[in-house]
Length: 236
Image (cartoon, rainbow, N blue to C red; front, side, top):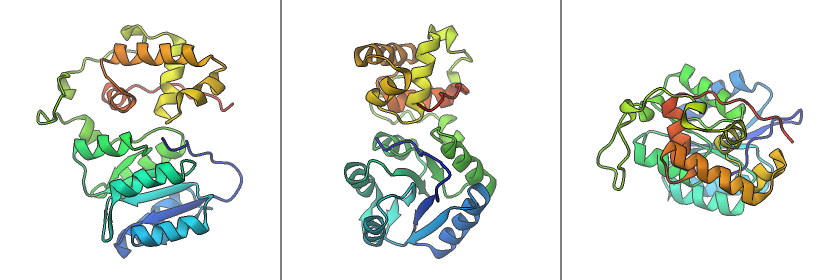
C-alpha cells in the first residue's frame, strides 16, 4: 500500500505519466488549479517514468495512465509499490470498469480518475486525494456488474442508507475506518491512534464484518457506495 500524501510547506513534486501530450497539458492545468505551487514533471512511457522517479525519489504523487506503449500499467503499479512505497499513486485511465478500479486499489492506488471525466470532476477528485481520502468514480459505485466472479453481495443500488452507528460501528472503529480510507496500514493506524496492533486487527475485522466485505479494498468501495463522510483524523 502506498503512503498517504503528506502536504507540507515544502515544494510538492508530481509526475504525470501519460503518452498523450494533450492529456498531460490538461493535467498540468488541473494541477495548477488544485496545487498551484507544485512542480509537475512528465513522462510518456513506463521506462521514461522510472528514469524520472530514479532521479526524483522524493516525489509526492504520480498520476499514472494504465495504457502505456511499453508496459502494462498494473505491472508498473506493482513495481512502484515494491520499490517506492513512499510515493502516492493515483491511476488515470480510459479503463473505468469495476474490475480495473478494484485491481488498482488492491495494488495500492489512492484513487482512480477516469479520463472521460470533465475537468471539474478531475479537480474534485484530486482535491479529495490531497485531503487524504481515496477517490472512486461515482459511476463505478452506482453500477453493478454481475459478471464479477465471487461477488455475491447485493447490487450497489440496493444498499440501504445507513450510518456507521446503524451498522454497529463504535466511534473508535469509525476512526480506524477513516484511516483505512487514507490507505494506512495496521501499524500506521496503531501509531496514529496509539493502539496495540491486536486491537487494531480486531477493529478491522469488526469493520469488514459490519460492511459485509472481505478486504480493505471492498471496504473502501462500500463506504463510497454508502456515501459516508468520515471525520478526519488529526495527523500524529
